[in-house]
Image (cartoon, rainbow, N blue to C red; front, side, top):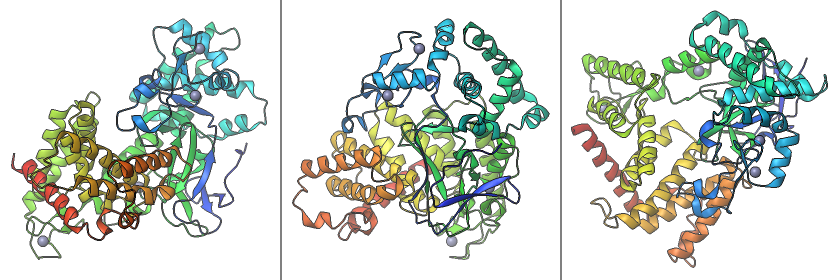
Length: 526
Ligand SMILES: [Zn+2]
Ligand SMILES: [Zn+2]
Ligand SMILES: [Zn+2]
Ligand SMILES: [Zn+2]
């Protein structure tokens, strides 16, 4: 069975020498182009944590659940329970009706109700949905062909055994049991286990436009894209609408790739994760390269980066003592192992301790994994606490030290979202701590500079019609009026330049860099 193909004219499907098949560019694809758009993925389902706060069909977040950062910039969304199960919620009658008829909630509702107050895990809910749609569609339809063509790797799952195989069996058995309350259709565990394996191999996290994970998505269209740790495209969501966008210009007949994993991890971690989750050895261009930019060491003398596999600074000639490198790598290994443990404590204290230990080595720069992840996690934890100043310092470190190295293009969506979040937190800091950080920064200029950077890149990063672009435009207008920039022609010339490239702002940028350097010194000295 071949899957239905509805790629844009810019891409075509071709057998791949080592990975089954892949998607290739039919002509030159400019950076920031939408390559694939799926308005209604087969499965797009909320995780347990978001059932209460998001619409079960369109995934819109209820207004009162939206973090204060983006609260003011969207039309209000009110959710009401499905009165049948009281497990899922909807933002409108239209969403409820579509979910009921087309997306099998009519079938699930009794199952959810019978289990209430217990909530089925997202994987169990997803495989029931897949199974129901697979069996109720006519053979030969897109859905049947699409699900049928997905790889399951059941033998690989069985062979590695352990937790994952046990989980596959348990989930399938439980879901088969739950499905018995339905008068419409119930399933055999083996069939559901096959669906479970297909789900795990082919699904992706549904994320908001600002990359917060909220659920699980399976679309046979996007499952055709192969993985690279240095991808030239990225998968994004706007509500339940999935899209794949180019991250750089892609030349004709080049394979279009996305990343299945956190590609900010070290090569060793990436390869292990790919092998254990997807059963292949990653041989992408980055994994095959001698040089791993993110694993560069930092020269303790001149602070320059030292390329992987070398311990002599090409800049100043300093030789980094071998025992310091060994100690740093040992620390990296133990912290990474701690973080990936099942019940890892991810609160502020242990996260901050790990970060300080890593900086304490004096040979690891801010880009070395998992330092960027630790900064990111701490920023999120501080935002949850309303500790704006600390959140700002961690986000500013990413902005000043990390983004340019990790995301080469200024319109990489993660970089754009990070810059926008930094701007939003800056507003809070300006209210709470008008004295700033020892350095008195001109909040208005820096804020407007950051926003023009976001605004100038959002067309390529998210698309001009995306809800993120809309949010950025509204915020921009608001800030212009608030700070009286409306009539400032100078400021309009800043548009899209990026904070660092705006003439006259060099002084402010230098202050921001100084704030980060001082912040990192405090982390190193404790
Ligand atoms: Zn909705
Ligand atoms: Zn219901
Ligand atoms: Zn790789
Ligand atoms: Zn040096």
